[in-house]
Image: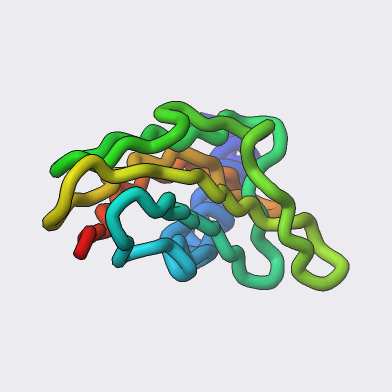
Amino acid sequence: MHPWLVSLLLLASAARAADPDPGSLYVVSTEGSTTSLRPGQPGTFVLSIRTVPGAHVSDEAPLKLLLAGSGGVQPAKATLGRADAKAVQKGSGPADPRFEVSFAMAGKGPGALEAKLTFFVCTDTLCSRQQKTLSVPVTVD
């Protein structure tokens, strides 16, 4: 192998080693979601992705949220994408996505909204596919 090729491979390897852990570049939150309802009252499921400075959710790669209910919880929409997300501006950088989906719950008692989120978090040097599964408990009193 040519010495210049070995040097190039070593430099590329060192650059990859310097990339941050993609999981440290964002926080996924369900803060603001309805967790307690009265019978017949609608609820709202909220999911936001907040990136750290220097990172962003790719606006070119897929962004997908799958919702399912248990215990009588019925989301208004089961599959959401980029068009369903609201943009939340974070200073001068790219906006972070936020989903707000209404739901209903048949009957009384406990239930839950199950969410499976797929997105790509990026920096200037990397773009990494991320998947998160979350559950938000809901009770009708």
